[in-house]
Amino acid sequence: MAGNELIGKEEREQVLDVLERGVLMRYEFDDARKGIYKVAQFEAAFARYLGAGYTLGVTSGSAALKVALTALDIGPGDEVIVPAFDFIATYEAVLEAGAIPVMADIDATLNLDPQSIEDRITPYTKAVIPVHMCGSSARIDEIVSIAKKNNLAVLEDNAQSCGGSFEGKKLGTFGDMGILSFDFYKTITTGEGGMVITNDKGLYDRSDWYHDHGHDHNPAVGRALEGRSILGFNFRMNELQGAIGLAQLGKLDYIIAEQKKNKSRIKNELEQINGIGFRNLPDPDGDTATFLGFNLPDANSAKEFKNSLKENGVDTICYKENNWHYAPRWEHLIARATANSKQYPFSNPSYKGSVTYNTADIPNAEELLGRFLFMAIPVIIPEERMEKIAKAIEKAGRV
Ligand SMILES: Cc1ncc(COP(=O)(O)O)c(C=O)c1O
Image 1 (tube, rainbow, N blue to C red):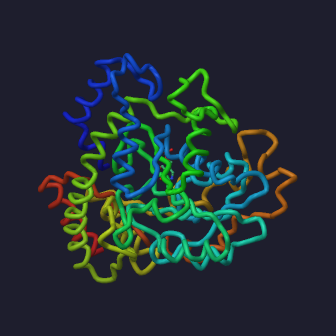
Image 2 (spheres, protein in one colour):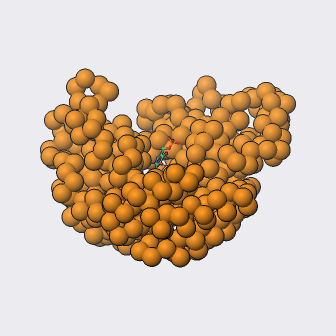
């Protein structure tokens, strides 16, 4: 559970510092705030941490996806390729932007299979969203080069692997744009919150305008007189979120280091069991270790192993059975049950494609996810809990 395990003195001090002056909005109120801009500081610190040109704090990871897709000019008539193993927010954001999500397969990394991108390209494909699931990267270098070859934009959804990297470069900085989530489950948290990442000034400007009703944020004239060139909406992060984010960002490397130690100890226990394999990590050094993914030879033995661990007090997730992280299980998506009664954007006449969500298109996901189990790795594991986990693994290995 990461960042939420460590909420303490630093977060309290940051929040009190905001409340001291009482300015909760990120813009304006210049006299009252006495030069303190927490969201702006959080963005600048994160850009440095990531080695990114621009970062923009927003209200959630879902909002960050919507803002980034809009900045990239993805909209009605367009298709966007997304992996079958994902959190539903990525699909929802594509639909929110008026475009159509196209389900692609995964590979042994359990993230988007670069090969599957080429298989899913149609004349309507505009972008691809690799999602770095459960702490570890996709084969992002290959994905970016396939996307470039096919003239597709890349938006990295890094909600689940904040602080992770591939060959020394931070995830979220490979594509045209990237996003992070700071909801309460994530590696660092601001309660709810998200971030848009890009190295492109034009894409940053469009994100900045869109996330705040089109405001061009010109400090020389003040908010009431600011100009605008596009319509927008409100996805502004507030100062309390920015303040907590600053405290949490200061803990990010520690969180990852502790999770790595814990993960390695649990992995050592699993390695003793015959028939257990592990998720393929394209760059183990860049893993954030929020999860340990391991597999059994088949779905039945995975189920038995899972049940035995559960009986002994250790929870694991089989994502093929999970309602929120595997596209074929989203009956409301498959039924096009949009919140609007017109089934927009599926029914949009400017959409000329014909999307389907058939499991026949994702053979790897169907085969792999049924026999993979995921264990969440906390930052803090007391010694007695670690012993309990080791015993539960040993017992499950005897079933
Ligand atoms: C892969 C992925 N993308 C996007 C999101 C959305 O983030 P948020 O909950 O901040 O809206 C999540 C949240 O779980 C996620 O896991």
